[in-house]
Image: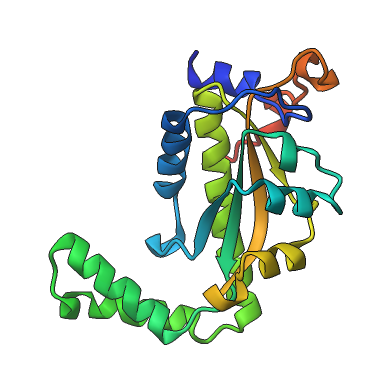
Length: 209
């Protein structure tokens, strides 16, 4: 199955079969997410693999998304709630170490990050970080489709409850979006056999020449 076939195959799965995703496929999806495009390469978000069934049940108790419980695996994308000098300094040191550079060689890059990020409010930086998380979410969806793993992105959950359960505030994070992974229950998911509906490309794509 090539990429376009895989994307035509995928849909937001509503009902999952009782079938577990292999660790090999899960790790490939996580690897793809980690390699996703990220502004300045900073990855100002984290991905949690929530396996604990009690946490998943509690989270689903006031959500309209049964996939939270029924899917094989549940991923949470959580973004930094603020960006401070320490985060920038740590990132600069990490880049220097990974690329075998002296920290001083990254002075201009560091100054650019500081001048753009430290003048913003925490809310502005959280929105920016959340957008990076959504880019990674898209990468995860594509990676899952390529592996013929079903996936459903979800916003309809109690983020305050989840943040408290996972202690995200203490980690400087806020929950943004969930991604369920598994395999579709074709017999019981009404949407599994429906034709995918998208705008025709000539209407969707506008060429500026």
